[in-house]
Image (cartoon, rainbow, N blue to C red; front, top):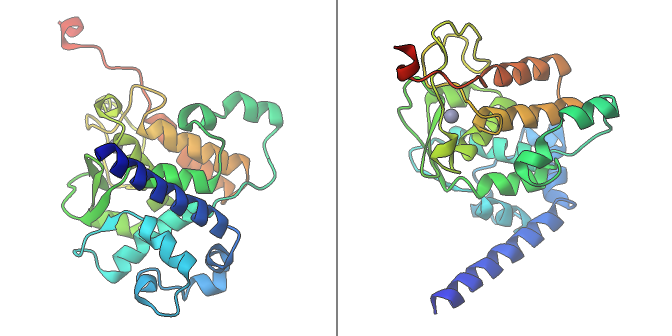
Length: 255
Ligand SMILES: [Zn+2]
């Protein structure tokens, strides 16, 4: 019985994914890609709107649950970040092929080649709900796939919101991806929060495939395929990589 229900759910999700994949080539994503229409597209009202197409409704139903404590503009900012990722498509490679092959880690860390739709599915599978709340020093906090977003999240650009969601989604894979403390003499800046003093805070990783590693890997593909301003992306890429440090020596060895 339980297995039957599970298979039924799986079937429904698969059908939704297939239909949504088809929609990548239809009006929904064409509409979102048009800068002129994008400004006027109301991400939050679509499911209730009688004029809304079936494809748009399906896309909305795939997104994680959004708390009622989010304002219409905040829900829109979150949805826009999800659709930003779903819409990413490779252009021609601007890096030398040899450099790309040496440095690209996307397929190794994500398990599939760089592509917006699959990355969007990867993301929504790791985020069950989103709400606004107190996140203290951090932009967002992940509690067992339920995200709390601080006010600073909504002040970020759509690219930085997308990066923050990818970062938090990686934390859903378990405590082995928890952060370690940055060193006391850590001088690097946070590209998302210039005021943050990262020294001695839980804002670094000891592994290359953690939350900072996967966002660096994502940004590398964005650079390689010329998907945003290059200087902007390189700054963010280097900033994310700077958070990956060697594990701090234990207290025992400090004695
Ligand atoms: Zn984190």
